[in-house]
Structure formats: C-alpha cells, structure tokens
Amino acid sequence: MNQIAINRQPKNQDCADLMSLAERELSAFFAAVTELYGSQLAEFAAKEWLRELEATDDLPASTREWRWVTVKASARLPLAAAASTTTHRGMLPSKTTEGKREQNHVK
Image 1 (cartoon, rainbow, N blue to C red):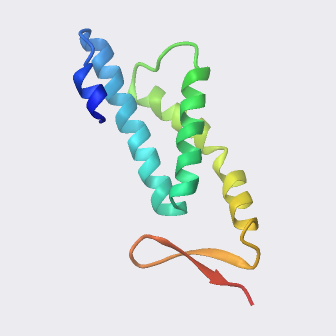
Image 2: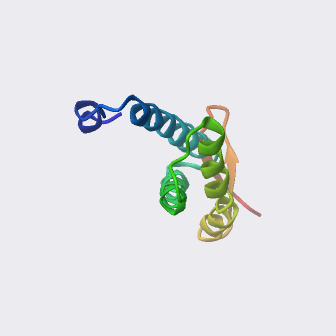
C-alpha cells in the first residue's frame, strides 16, 4: 500500500474492507502474472484489471465478485502474451528454476 493510501484511510469501515479486498486481489493477480510472464505483461494485466473495475456498475462486495474482475481481465492475457512473444521473433519464453522468465533461441 502506498504512503498516500495509508494516510487517507476511509472513515467508513465497509469502504475500508472493500479497498482491502481490491488491493489483495489486484496484488495477487499482478504477482502471478509477473511470475509467469514478466513485468511488462503484468503492467498490461494490471491496467486491464483496473479497466474491468471501472466498467462494473457497482463495486464488488465479496471476494468472489473481486475474483470475477480478475477473471475478465485475465481473459485478455493470451492475446497480449502472444503479441509480446511475436515481437521477439525467433525467441520463445521459458521459465527458469528461479521463477523468472528467460528467452531461448528457436533453431
């Protein structure tokens, strides 16, 4: 949580609970995408997550509803991942033992 958010905690407990759920969901989504695909695609994924949240009529009120925002945002990842690998022609992503991505040449 950034310093501004810490200093501006909402006075309404329901709002604070919703903010906490949102932060945890987005953070988990960002971490998973970073581990699997790298930071560049994770930034794209986070922006898509925020777009999905903006598109909702009401703020999600449960973990299940927040997860649905994540599911909808993650649906765009295959196209973005494919686009990012085609920009590195002749390169395929592979996972290292440390959980970071590296590029291997295709022969």
